[in-house]
Image (cartoon, rainbow, N blue to C red; front, side, top):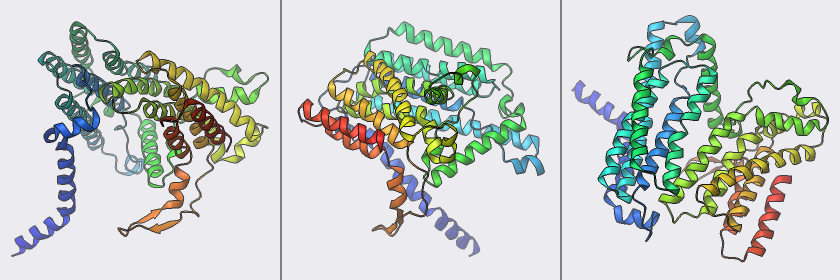
Amino acid sequence: MSLLVRFGRWMYRISDAVLITFGLAALASSPFYHVAEVRSELIGASVAPPFAAFAVLCLGLGIAGRSLLRRDFVWQDPAKLTWSDGSDARIGAIGRRLWSGWAIRFALVAYATAGGAVLFGGSLDWVRVGVALFAGVAILALVTARRRATTRVRWIEQAASLLLPLLGGLLAVWSVAPLWLWTAVGLAGAAALALLYGSGPPRRPAAAREARRSELVARFNDRLVRRMSVAFLDLLALLPAPRPMPWSRLFAGPAIVVRFVIAGVLARRASLLLGVLLVWAVAVVHLVFPLLSPVWLVGVAAYFAALPFAALLAKLHQQPGLRRWLGCTDLDLRLATTGLVVAVVVVWLALVVVFGIPLTPPIMLAALLACGAVIRTASRPALDYGNVGVAVSPDGNLVPFGLIVQLIRGPEVLIVGLLIADSGFTIGPKALICAVIAVFAALR
């Protein structure tokens, strides 16, 4: 009897998790048994090129490898390090985090590629080289993440992880000979074998054994900040923190506000790689989903590509006391940041055009709207938790509408502007309305 009671309690505890799991599994498997319906919604009557699924694979492998090489799994609670640090237990826990993170990332890549292959089709040659490239890059990413790396080596790793998205972008614009693809497979396998030495035993990676206390605590703090930022809907806290700069003479001379803003951009130079990745992501998505409007792709991607470079403006608006040291008005600071954001978006848009997106007036309006939305988001004051505006939704859950309104400051004008830019109106009225929206977003 007690066994039945325990079984009933166990089933009661896991019932919600089981229902959610079955629901997600049904949703994830729908592209495989509703192929015609999904293809009509995403592709329509267009004929996808034979390498579309392979381009998706390259983009996914690049994103998964870049995410894993950040080594976010190397962290430990400072309290455990101080009072109950068992080195073997800590190294084993970090090793398990590495293996689980690696498996989840590349399982998602495999799922996305399999779904793309079902939707787009392709020849057997693409399937063979795709499976080989997936195996080679997955092993290379795992072996590389197991090793401890200096800051300079991490820069090299992050830059090298963009080579596969570049290959996917080239496939999205031009055809690449299979010989080059097999060459990439061979290079990935050779690099994995070369880096295997010194990476540590399977369950005890060198990145965990050689990690210093300062590194473990710093990554734990970063992880805690990210979790709290998401929990309290303060997503601006997720913007990249500045890094030290070797250029000490940058602040010497006139136009100190402009120099200060330039320094803020250069201190976040690591975000350049994210912008480059978004260029190739736009090219690949435009290839595989031709029904998606390129105006929306460019507008949303340009917003996320330029937002990290306005992090300095966000920092100063969240902590107004810091602005008094500059001795400038709010308008001067906005104009200086706007000029640099526009320069970043212009360079980014030029790369997007090189990779196959046509430069049309609506595309240019989308980029202009992204610049205004970035400034509006970064100039948002600190969140006011006294104005949460909690209301009861129909299903009984509490929704903090006041926080949501503060959170979407910037994206709301981007969405409205993109609706107008992608509408069927003539270009004259559209350009005038979008310009007014962009100026309003940058100044308010």
